[in-house]
Every structure is written in structure tokens, then in C-alpha cells.
Image 1 (tube, rainbow, N blue to C red):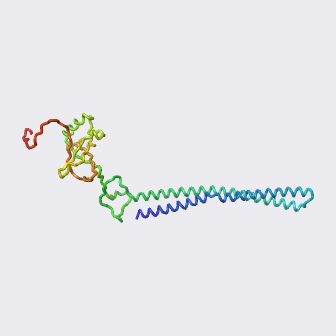
Image 2: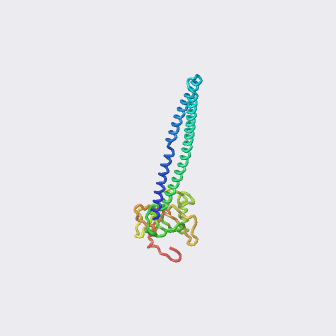
Image 3: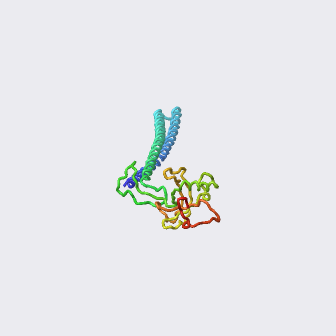
Length: 278
């Protein structure tokens, strides 16, 4: 319902903008100015002709060829023609002034309607929720018709990123020191240095006992130990293009601390343990 309302608001804003743009095009039409300019030119031509006739009548009157009445009629016609010129000139000035005023007013109306349309589009965009990530979405927590108020933390749905996935695990302080020394040959003081070749490889053993086909890399280590458990939290990143893994799964991780060529491997079953050790 909100989206439908905002859509109708956007349509009205669009229609109002089109009307304002049409009014602007009409306001910018200079046809009336051209008509008044043509009328002024015609009146000036007539006035010039009448003035010349008045001068001819004046010469003829001095020569006694015409009466004073004819001269006065010619002078009166000249005054009327001049009045018509003044009227046409005033109409042209008024038309130019009206043109500027109407154009400015129409441009302002178009600007206001464009702002209203932009506001309607912005309000319409609020009716859509775009996912900030690519993944899988869970069930809808809010159904159509439910009340969702502004400034309230209403959970609509939950999304999970599927590729890549991160596995969080902890190692003991002793294992952290061993791992740190192993990594010191590459760059002291860091578990990962940013490049794929320098990040520690990590294997993941799934709940069915099989090793994940994709090998991960350790890309994060907590800067501090957990004092309550004396452990260090690490994170490994795994590719999950086949979507076999899901968020919330449990798994075991296996990391290579060091390599010992030609070392003797004794089976765990052959080792006994007492108070003195193994």
C-alpha cells in the first residue's frame, strides 16, 4: 500500500512537471513580441507617410494651393499616427516585460516541480529494500499488512553471505606461540600479511569426516588473547562456490605448523601416558 501510494504521488509529480514544462515552452514563445514589433514598424511607416503629407500640405498652403482646413486635417492625421506609434511602442515594451516575467515564473515552476518529482522518486526508493550483500535470504519476518513504523528496529528478514564463508576457531597460547615462530621467517609479528602466498593454508574437516575440497587461508587473528580461556581467535576464509557449506555449520580445522622432513612418526596407539608424561 505504501509503494502504491508513493507510485501515485510520483505520477502526479511527473504530470505536474510535464504541465510546467509545457507552460514554460509557451512562456518562451516570442510570437506576441514579433506581432507587436511588426505593428510598431507599420505604425512608424504610416506616421512617416502622414508626416510627409502634412509637410506637403503646408508647402501647398503657403503657396495658396490648399485651404487651412486641409492643412489642419493633415496635422491632425499626423498626431493620430504619432499616437498610434506611441501606443504600439508601449505594447511592445509591455509584451517584452510580460515575456521576461512569464519566462522567469515558468522556469521557477519547472524547478519546483522537478524538485517535487525528485522527492517523490526518493520516497519511492524507500519502499524498496536492497540487500547489501549477495547470498540467501531466510523467511520473511513481516507479512503484507503488518504494521511497520518509522524509527523502529523491525526485522524484515535475515540474509547470509554464502561465498566466501569464514570459519572462526581458537588455538591455545602454546599453539599461538608455535605458529608465531613459524610465521616469523616470513614476517615477524603477523599471522597473515595480505598476499595469498603468505597467508597460512587451512584445511576444514566436515562433520562427515571428509576433508573439504576447497583449501582456505587464515586471514585474521585477534590482536589479544581471551583471558578467560587463554586462547587466541583466528579466522579462515573458504570458497563456497558449490554452496555445500552453510552458515552455522560446525567443522574442524587443520593447520600446518611446521614441516619436518624424514621425521619418525610413531602411532598414537603405541604411546602410553602416565603421570610423568607420554
